Structure formats: C-alpha cells, structure tokens
Image 1 (tube, chains in turn green, purple):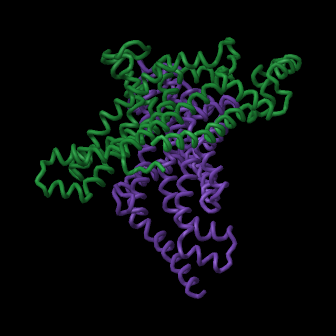
Image 2: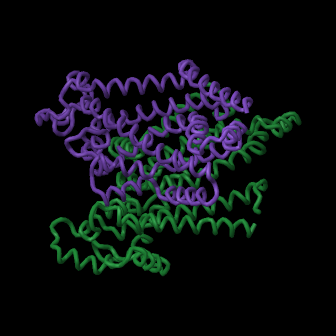
Image 3: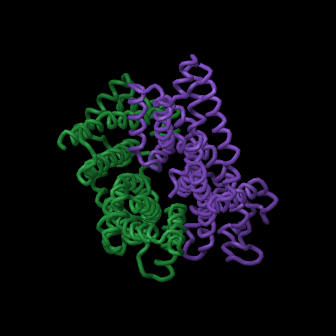
Length: 306
Length: 294
C-alpha cells in the first residue's frame, strides 16, 4: 500500500512541473511585453523599462523560471501589483470560505443525486425513472450562474426566506451551494443510475436474491456498496468543477471566497495574484485526486498496488 | 496478403454500413429525435434571425424600458426598451457558432495529440498524457478567464481561451481508442502491406474512432455554449454591440428584482439549446455505441 501511495505521489511530480510551466508561460502569451500590459498603454517607456528590470524580464527565460519555481518552493508566490500584499497568505485566507461552499455543494449534489439515481435504477422505465432522467438532464443543462440568479429571485426577493449575499451562517450557504451543486447532482444521478443497473445485473446479486434476501438488503447491503465506488471518483472531478464554478457562483452571490477574489484580481490584471490563484487551484485539484485515488485503493481490494 | 486486403475491405464496409444506418436509427430513438428537433429549430432561428425577430435587437426605446411580457413584446423589454425576444433570437447565432467552432478546434487538437500518443506510445505518449493531466488540473473556466485577462475582452479571445482548455477529453478518448485499435489484426495487416504510419493513422485508425468522437463532440458543444455565456456574464466576452445570451444575463442581473424577465428568458434559451445537445448526445451514444447504453 505504501508503495502504491509513493508511486501515486511520484506520478504527480511531472504533472506539477508541467503545471508550473503552463502558469509561467502565461506571462509570455501576452501580445507584447508583460510589463507594458501590467502598466497599461499610458505608461512611459522609462516606467516600462524600470518595471522590466524590477521583474527581471531582461534575463533568459530559463533563469527567470528557475528563480520563480525556487521562490514557490519557499512559499513565496510574489506580491500583488494592486496593493503589494503577499500572494500566498492572501489566497490562503480566502480559502476556508470556498472550501465551505465546495463541501456544501457536494452535500447538495450527493444527497440529491444518489437517492434519485438509486430510485431511478430500481424503477427502470417507470414514471419515476423518466422523471429522474429528465431532472438529471435539466440539471446538467442549466448554467450555474443562471440557477443562482433564479434562486435569488425566488427565495430571496419573492419569498424572502434566504439571504442573497454574504457569508457567516448556514442560511448564507444554502443558495450558492444549490447553484453550484445542481449540475453535479444531475451528473451523479446519471452515474448512480447506470452503475446500479450494471451492478444489479451481476451474478452475486442474483445469488443474493436467490437466497431469498429482502429487496432492501440486496439493494443497500450488496448492490449499493459496489455501485458507490465509481461515484467516488467523480468527487475529485466535481471538486475541480466546483473550484471553477466557484468563480461565477461566488460572484453572483457576492460570497467572499477565493473564486470571487480571483475574478476581481483578473479584472484588475493583478498578474502575480492570477498566477498564484491558478497554481493554487491546480495544486488543490491534483492533491484532491491523489487522495481520492488512495481512498479508492483502500475501498476496492481489487485494485492492485504493485 | 490477399486475405489481409479482404479483411481491410470488410472493415471499411462495416464502417460504411454504420454510417448509412445511423441516421435512420437516430430518427427512431426518441431522445435523439427530441434533441435533433431542438437543435434543428435553433439552427433555423440562427439562420433566419433577421426575418424571425419582430424588432431590431439594438433598437432602443427608453419610454418602453422594462416592460413586462405582453402581446406586443412577448418576452418583455430590457432597461433600454429593447425587445428581449428579438435579442434572444439574434443571440442564437453567436451561441451556436461559438459552440461549434470551439468544439471543432478542441477536437482537432485533442484528436491529433491522442492519435500520436496512442500510436507511438513510449516517451511521446508519456509527455503528451502528463501534459494533458497538467491542463486538466486547471479548472477550465479559471484558465480561460486567466487567458482572457492576459489577452483582453472579446469573442475571438473567448474562442481561443475556450479552445485551449477543453481538448484534454478528446486526447484521452482518442488515445484510449487507438491503444486498443493498434493491436487489431487489420492494423497488423496494414503494416504488413507496407503502409506508412500517416496512412494507417488517418485512414484505418481515425475512422474507427469516429463513433466515440462524434458522441463526445455532440455532448461537448453544450460546454462552450455555457462557458461563453459565463464569460460574457462576467463581462469578458461580448461587447455591447454584440448580442449574446450571457451578455443579456449580465446586464439584466442588475434589475433582477424589478424585471425578472430580463434574466429568466435568456437563461431558458441557454438551457433549451444545451439540453438539445445533451439529448442528441445521449441518443447518439445509444445508437452508435450500445456498450455505453445506460
């Protein structure tokens, strides 16, 4: 098992290396000079030249990259161009709010997706199955920001049940979590339905039924355990999707997380913050997926570690 | 040698048979049929937008600002008194064109990288697949936003940003298909006949990946439509002289409390078109790849 974990961690190293190259190369996909873009068109050539020197842009790219990665390894992601604040601590301070939202959205998508998926598979082609499939399709077809706006319109403006903006209470979390979790709920419903249908057709389920076990025991004790495993892999992907979705959802709900902050800094062209943000999102995605892989190894003994 | 040539012909005949029968089977599949009707309708609306729209989508009339839905303006008017139905009809154009172009570019990049990785294997495959993993690690919309921040606002940049981020699925899919296809007998036969790699890849491997690519691309059109709307919603996509559904949502959002129709209907338009592509994708999967059927 330790070998497997070590192997999985080693696999992440080249990916992380390529992630840093992609983020670093962002600086150079600009049409023209990065310093000019940062300062704007009205900056004088002297100002541009001085920023170029300050940023070390005169040196060979490889040297710049090596220095940048060296700083990253020491936890130095640079300073904001807008307010001079250190990038890493600023981003980290926004992270808890977003993690809260991501977990809440996962709870929403799993508590909706799993039961509906199970019911749908057990009542195949019956009205409840058709309804579940329509729900799942609508869920994945609605843009999350529009769902968010509709939720604000109905539950905040008309019914006045829940707040439209802010953070601090569970009530603040409900609408953004539903907006962010709806599409995932649709995906999980579809996945749950198809894996359950697959598992229900297997020999060991037929054996369980032949033994005379009750339907509820066959479904929940035998089938569900195995059908849930593929759904687990979706968690990693959904976290990645949620990180992306948080940018728009947090903006819609004025939720003070890292997603909204990323959007604000993007609009201000605060490049060190943007690069730090991209890097942090990518590292989080990689780490989450490593954890899921290892967890999957624990839960499914068929997975071999060598 | 003749035996192998016969086998190659037989495989080609199978692929041909699949193509001719597909459309008929799609018409018999209710999911695909509803999807095709929705998409067909959207394409019709996009082509004939100037004839179908009751008003000029840019014609302002401040006295008619925020009129609720009525017989005169079935979906109401926005802050500037512009007819929302007409704007939605014109917005169909950008959404569909953006969806198709972005998917074509994504598929192009992904197919080429997937073919190379799967066919040549070894270090080339390792590098391409690790690079793919690295790109997947970035949430697509954030990477697209960053590219937009570096390159600036505009639909052309939206197209570039969305194309750069979404090809990874195609690369993984095609590589997977190639890995199994390259071991088949008819590929060994093609090699034995002395065919060059280029010809084997594009003539004998790629056509056999088409079923999966078509399903993936059809469902895939939905994603850039939503992403474009998202970027325009954040104020990074369309300019004010262009009509897109995302931009309509972005401007309507400020008046959500007083004029719900400015936000509700453009969002519904996005949902219906995306639903159409998802339905067609599901139907195509049932018809072309019965192994994947739910």
